[in-house]
Length: 608
Image 1 (spheres, rainbow, N blue to C red):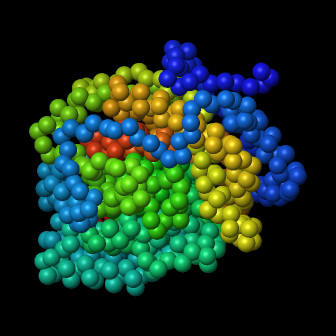
Image 2 (image 1 turned 135 degrees about the horizontal axis):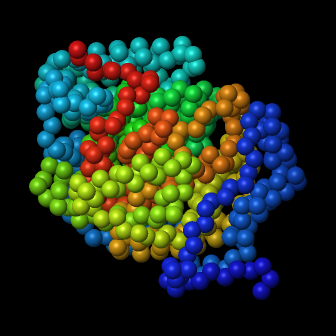
């Protein structure tokens, strides 16, 4: 048999034999001159392939992809078994106009009285303004969208002079914002706003098309080869509800990193601690929302890129089921792991933005036959019963495998609160083959990224990428076609494991990240860095959402001893957005009093 390992067919795997294996990543942490030198070597013809081969052996990837017989057939895209309908929901139709879907979602939200909340002595010490607060302010003519626009423009312009710089946007046009705001103000004056989202300010990640802005993907050259003639489908849906786009938000170059480090446009800073990373790759969108500048933003999530920065910046980030939102008009529209998802400061705002942007692409509708989208009816009397019947699956050894115990204990406290206040039951689960899932994900996203960028790299653009992106690209080039197929066979196995878990649990609960916001090494600002240990911690709990296309959300639940935000992640069944949104809303309510104002915060709707 030699070195060959044969996996047990997935349905015959005995879960009682599964042992949790902590993730061990073997790779150097490099910045500055050492990083440049490493890239030079990694890109050299013979020595480069030897280095990558050594790294893959060290991390047991060769053994898994080349020396193992995987009995399952490949699954090249998520394949979901039919799902039962979710209870206590309001169903909508993806063919309806976005503004009608938003109206449906609005009716599902709990009663809220903005005027009393403003005068309120009952308020927690800090809260974010909700979309419904803005809508009330506009309708009562306390402020106009044009007045808010001026405030936002002055903050963005002022950010350029900060020490250290806080580059939130890559593309910004003050006159364009004024024009959109004036049109919205006029609609309010005439008494016909388009929806509750009219006059709501949003930022769009730089890998999603938003006319007339270029889409650079935070590179120095992508706009030269990718022309933007119209909005991405998600952006045009948001605009039809009256949303005002403030520009293209900063990100980790081409989404290929978890920190948000960007030597080209500058690295976005965490509003809770300016010397720390926001997390990536949707670094700008999360920082903009967390700092109070915008109610919401759109990000992309192929390896936690919406959830990681949302968690590190203390806001809410939703990754939808793969195929639930259209990727048309984004730079990553040909992959099998990415989605476009909303980031907002509250769960209800995420629900409203999700309602606006949802809707499968025509090809995904044929391929997946998605059930009609629905929203949790949070205003109904049944909501409490539905909430109480939820079973939460927790894999304790994995849940506790974090950089600091603050994370697992804060998340654990929330599960106790859910049980005490709502009667949710936490059940112990086992998730086999977590290391296999990591390998299958990196090979999938890496090969798909390489495939889409190859023509430009062959054209000489590859050398203009940042050093950490070039390190990733060199690693991705080492994957073979058979590695890719083996990864897709693993994908089928891992989907089976999760579908078995969902027979007894409604939601899988984990911390969102294995560490809170890491410090930015000063040596990493000029040329970037590669730190796979940090990446491992940040992506530890993220991957089922991407490799298997499952819906997942992160909700802020507290802080570590350094005052840095901690997120709890809820992973749902395929198409189970309503269930995780319902649970997220309950968690948010339980944690509302503990929410802290970020060190860098702009009170954009200050009406005092």
